[in-house]
Structure formats: structure tokens, C-alpha cells
Length: 250
Ligand code: NAI
Image (cartoon, rainbow, N blue to C red; front, side):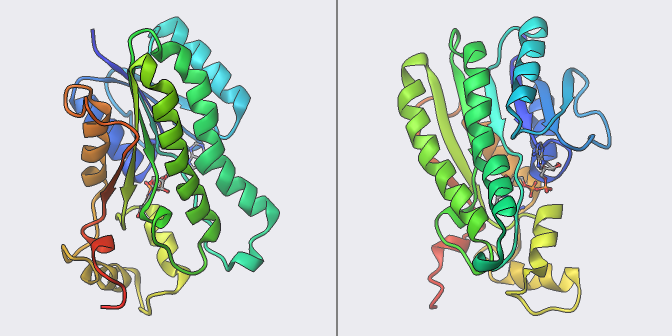
């Protein structure tokens, strides 16, 4: 019987690559996104068009999974949004939206999915960001939401450990996705066009380039698969091409 993974934010970037990788590994993928994916995610799987910050949507999704698959082995909380603005210009609506999609959604997802995981155990992987540990100007709401997600990851690991549910976080650095491309216009790099900005950003990394979505998907899969990371819980795995290893004063 194939394992079942619920993955949010599957229409683009890291979530899309993660859904593809789980599918290749023989998992059934239940994808969730506010946008329709361009092509079917995997041969065997389902897709729900839903907003992860909507409590009622989670109730409906979980009712559907309970009826069809009957269980969940892994939950990947990947959907996220970024607002790139000076802190004092960030409106309450923008602040609440970032918190809702990046942090409250994880509370809703875990509360709803837990009953489908508690019998057999499983894994939860939260996609945080290096902005949880070191950040830049004009991205405070996002950084706060991703920092909160690390605290939540540890708290959940402790509370869900007795149910044999491991909870870990992945902290990607710069990864080539639509979110990164939009964020590059935030202005901390001075470049003329997108490829120039991407190259400049890449050259600041120890590895000499930015990451690919599949490189984050591999880390997510490692943490989700109980055969590979069975002794890991409550941890934060940084995957950033060495960006946070180097002193910014260097
Ligand atoms: P992306 O913008 O390419 O994809 C995000 C996906 O989430 C989109 O398909 C979008 O429709 C979906 N989404 C947004 N709001 C949603 C909602 N309310 N409900 C359901 N789905 C929703 O972004 P990317 O880069 O793939 O980001 C994935 C995760 O990785 C995010 O949590 C992001 O914060 C995190 N991340 C990304 C980094 C990067 O450099 N690309 C770096 C660090 C973290």
C-alpha cells in the first residue's frame, strides 16, 4: 500500500518539485493550492483548490482524505507568501495575510490532519526560511512568520512525539522560484534585469549559485521518510548553499 503525503503550495516552485519527488518515490500525493497546477502532479493523487489559511477548507479536505485514503503518513506545510515592504508601511491586512498563510495555516493543518496520522505515526515537515535566523530590510512580517514556524516545529515535536509523529523544519536559502524572482525586486541588489540579479545573488553563496527547487524537495523528502530520518525530530535543517555559514562582515 503506497504512503500518503499532503503537500501544500504544489502549483509552483518548491511545492511542485516536492510533489513530483514524492510521486516518483511511489507516494500518493494530495496537493493543496490556491492556484491550479499546470499539469497533473502525479498519476495517483488528488488536488484540492483551497486556501491553507481557511479553517473550513481544512475540514473539507480532511473529510475527503478520511473517506478516500483513510490516513496520512506525511504532511508538508510548504505554501507561503512574502510581503516585501518597510515594516512601518506594512498594513495590518498584509501582516495578517503573511501570518495566516505562513504560520496559522500550520496550526490549522496539523489540528485537522492529526487524527489521520495518530494511529500509525508519521512526519510533518514545515518549510521555514533562512529569514528565521538572519534577515534583511523590508521583509519583517515574513521573517517573523518563519521564525514562529521554527518555535512551532519544536513545540509540535514535543507534543506529538508520543504519537510517533516526527516534526522538523527545512530552512531554504535563495531558491529559483517565482517567489524569489518577485522578492529580488526588493532592492538590496542593484541590477538591471532578472538574470543579472540572480547571478549576483548566486555569486554571494559559498556554492556560487542559488538553489533549485528539487534540492529543497530532497531535504523535505529526507525528513518526511521515516526510513531515512527516523531519529530526527524538532530540528531545523538549513539548505542554503552556505549563505548563512559566512559572516556578513567578511
Ligand atoms: P512560490 O511562490 O513559487 O510557490 C508558493 C505556492 O504556494 C504557490 O503555488 C502559491 O499559489 C501557493 N500558495 C500561496 N498562498 C497560498 C494559500 N493561501 N493557500 C494555498 N496555497 C498557497 O514559492 P516557493 O519559492 O516555491 O516557496 C515555497 C515555500 O518555500 C514558501 O513557504 C517559502 O516561504 C519558502 N521559501 C522559499 C525560498 C525561495 O528562495 N524561493 C527561500 C526560503 C523559503
